[in-house]
Amino acid sequence: NDTLRFLVLDAGSTGTRAALHEFFVERTPKSPNGPLKLRHLRLRRYSRKPGLSAFQHFPDRSRDQVNALLAAAAADVPKPQRAVTCVALRATAGLRLLDSGSRRRILRVVRDTLATSAAFLAPDIDSAKLLSGPEEAKFAWLSVNYMLGKLDEANTNFETVPVLELGGGSAQVAYEYPDGELSAPLDRASSSKATLTGRRIRARSYLGLGVRESVLRFVGYRNGKSAGTGVSKKAYNSSCIAANASLNFSFGSVTLQLEGNQRDNSSGSTAATVKKCFAQAKDLVQQVKPGIAKGEKTVYAISSIYYLVKYLKKSSPVPGTRVTYSDSVCPSEPRGDCKAYSISAGDIADNAAAVCRNPPDQGPYTPYYCINLSVLSAMLEQMGLPDSGTVTALGGSDNLGWTLGFSLDALLQSAAASAATLTATATAAAVSMATVLSMLVPARIAQL
Figure 1 (cartoon, one colour):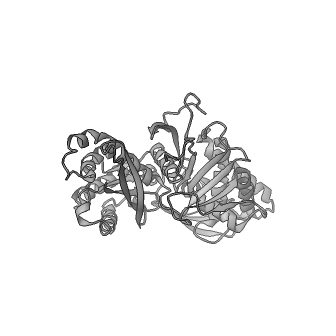
Figure 2: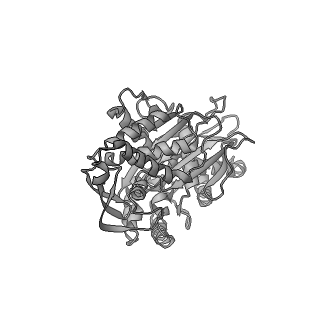
Figure 3: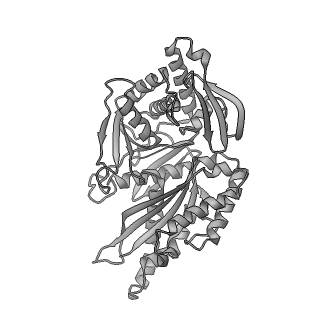
């Protein structure tokens, strides 16, 4: 029985976060070479800002950020274990929004940095890659269902939950669907399906619907395209931002001055403003396809959605809105570490309208909540969740993200591949599961 560690660098749109996952390998005493179970022990987190996309014009600056994260993580791993601890970087929406040449230059620097670092074991060319949107959705689905205990043997009804994620640049949705019953045609361009732990899941990703990127689309900076970087001296405005607001907005390599639309917001017609914001959101989410299993009435949500629903709970834009709270939703986490706020889809829409009638004008994130809530509400409607449906927003635990699912998949797939190796060497007492997986996991990372 061994403790395994896996270091995943999550190169997101607003920063790079290193997740050092530690697992305990459980093997059945009666069948030591049989199927393995991984029990998550702990997660250590390290982060650096900005996101790698901010180095679009200076890719070599990525090296210092990655080295700093490796050094921080190495301090928490016993020296003898570092050589058998795998590391991989996967970049998400921030790099997806860049042109292919910029992406290649940044990832080349990162790969060189990992290859020359003596801290951890890195597969050569595949140590740093772009994580596709559907892959991100798939691994987030695995993380959430693992944390909720839905993949445990004790879950005899085999029910899993749909997962919706709203990041900085994109939105992801993944759910399990019954054999022979598809809620929508499979779109090869934006979807993927895979079998994980014997489950068939559908995963989709929608670039441009993240809480930061959607702001750029609302004010017309992107105009629906991924082009446009740098610092703009022009002030952009939107009716969905407070009339008196003057905001410095940054996302990736973009910095803008944003203002409320004085004419629209001073006309006295708040209903017209709400209608305009909702119409923009509806246009933006047209790419979204029906995204939950037929008849599903509950969606579990993570990332930015957790903070949006938490805000509705605390600020009550619509008095009397029912938002229920729980602090013990993840069986494997200590009470209070994994929290949930539940609200109906209809109440999200009503509160989005209330926020748009009087948008906040202070704070780093709240001035954009009219835009964010409008997009979330429109997306839920487009996905097919009824107004009476429930959104359960999970947060408080760093395990509620794609890196845990990525680690689980890589380790379990590699463990399955190592069965023959273990059988052949079962008589050698010195054989370590960590040693075997250190040879096999890089190959699995390459597939991912």
